[in-house]
Amino acid sequence: MSQQHSSVLIVEDTHDIAIQLCNFLESKGFVVDYAETGARAITLACSNHYDVIILDLMLPDIDGIQVCEAIKKSCDTVPPVLMLTARDSIEHKVAGFGVGADDYLTKPFVLEEVYLRCIALTRRHRLHQSKILEVGDLKIDISTNQVSRAGESIKLSSKDFQILSLLAEAFPNALSKRHIVEKIWGEDSPETDAVRSHMYTLRNAVDKPFAFSMIKTVHGIGFRLVSQD
Image (tube, rainbow, N blue to C red):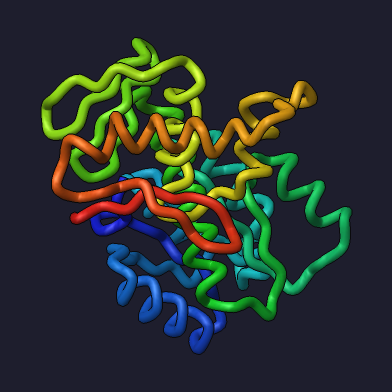
């Protein structure tokens, strides 16, 4: 699930902002294309495969809402769209999501947050396309509940499998213990420290037989997967 080969189309008519986004995302490993107008964005989006599109709402020729709608309706492969705009009213957000926008970020923004939103959208999009999660040499088949690492099969309990899948979906970010409890147990929260117990059994199964430990504790936050890739 690495972003190293992910591609992004940046649609932004303000030159300085476009250059900042292009340079920053390229430094993070993205392959970047750029469009200054809505018409050019639609042409590029429908003739190339992108993992995510960053779309400004204020464009010189076509409103970003219309661009998003055209891309979602016309392209054979529909990528997730992150809207960037100075408009922060709920009406504009409703309009954006109404035509298929997947996320929304208001200007001024922090470049690192744009990057993290792109990673999240890219990962979510790929998960919808594939039922196999891969982090380094760890492979998780959601459809069959099978797990393997470096080609070796790993047997997990149902709860351990669910927790490991959550960590893989969140990779490279960390998940809090509270988030794991809410996702796995919902309102029926366990009375004991069940997460700690399951992390112990997960580590025995996923890490102990191998030289490199993938499950890490992030002090003060929770847990995350790491990869040698």
